[in-house]
Length: 151
Ligand SMILES: CC(C)(COP(=O)(O)OP(=O)(O)OC[C@H]1O[C@@H](n2cnc3c(N)ncnc32)[C@H](O)[C@@H]1OP(=O)(O)O)[C@@H](O)C(=O)NCCC(=O)NCCS
Image 1 (cartoon, rainbow, N blue to C red):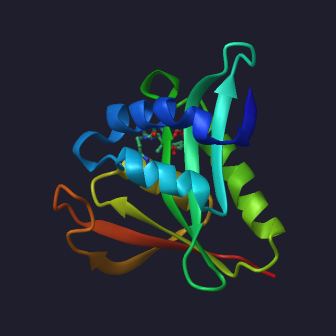
Image 2 (cartoon, rainbow, N blue to C red; image 1 turned 90 degrees about the vertical axis):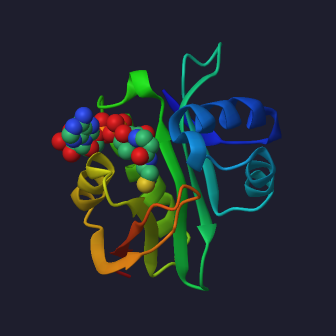
């Protein structure tokens, strides 16, 4: 199992996985292309190095000057609930800390996504009580979750 940077050769696989998992809320191919060009981290989790099978990815972008935003994060269905999401998130938080300029990590999560919320809380993300309305293309609302980085 390896974590590597996503590059433009991964675009098709990334878009397919995104559509499979997020369906009507999936990021478009165009947006993914732009995110591959510009990000703090766009990381893929791969198993079997020879076949380079991507089982998940995470995208972190700059928000405000000292804030990083996790805008996309998934593990392929048949690999979920085996610790891979925790592994990728842990690695990503460490990478963000290593940038030394980030004071806070934020993300949005759908109100009903208890698995993801539990995972983020495990990593000490705190849920902001304000609900972000119409956050998703489907019109669904989101929570904002935040992790303060201690310097
Ligand atoms: C959220 C997601 C990335 C988690 O990845 P994962 O590899 O399944 O996560 P892990 O196996 O590391 O589990 C992490 C924690 O999530 C919770 N969890 C995972 N699967 C669960 C399940 N089926 N039921 C209840 N809790 C679950 C547990 O708290 C678990 O921690 P623990 O094993 O220490 O108790 C994955 O479920 C996913 O891709 N979901 C669809 C896309 C998504 O919702 N992305 C997040 C958008 S904000």
